[in-house]
Image (cartoon, rainbow, N blue to C red; front, side, top):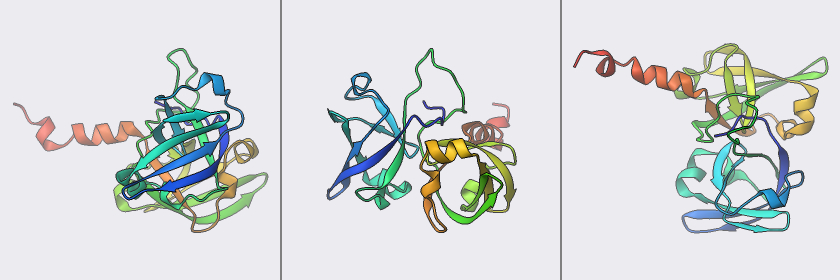
Length: 202
């Protein structure tokens, strides 16, 4: 489990393209290499992945066909920056919101506006995701825990303060950029539990 508070900005060092999966080599900076272990989970642009090798300040992960089809990882290229977050420790601070690293789908940047020192980003998503997004609710965009400013049908907006602009890769986004979206898990559980087949007396 993650919180959506980005720890480091990594860079795609190399990509090994396979028939049904890709292997990515990522260079990290702030994370202490001695604290990482092979087999642990790490969030890359919000996707929960497993570290399979470690060497210096490089780690690798494998992305399956399913992961590539559901996320923006298939669009990564060498030199592209990515958000990194290690899994939450049991005694760690919970500063963001519950982020599982299981991406619901992708969104597309539809608008970017400068508002004072902040930047407002708008994203368009499919109706299958829009139904879970509420004004002032939580959402993870490329793994970043954000508060939804407003929702209009299948478009939602978020406000990015200067700190987040510097400490994440959201400032690299442009119109039409594709981002990973994870909706608040609580809403998905509520939806399922309120379906007729779960509310009828047995």
